[in-house]
Length: 78
Image 1 (cartoon, rainbow, N blue to C red):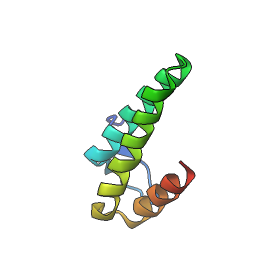
Image 2: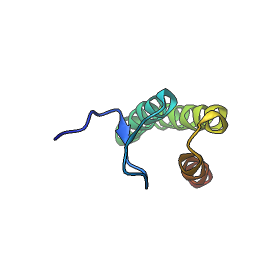
Image 3: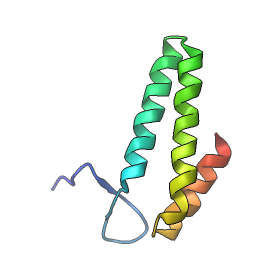
Image 4: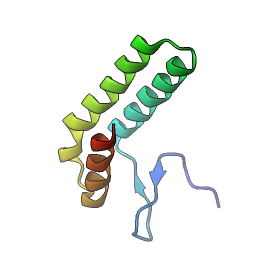
């Protein structure tokens, strides 16, 4: 059976819902990649900054500790 698009896989057997802020982050990163492909670097950078700001302001509220650790690693990579 197909799972809804709003689930994420973790080590647990039951998928958890993806927090809303991660959807916003994904949208910002998608926009950033689109602007980067168009060589519109100021807009691309703005979208990346927005994604990082959204992650920073929400990661500590996320109840999933494994996801928190993963997001913190992603922030450091950006």
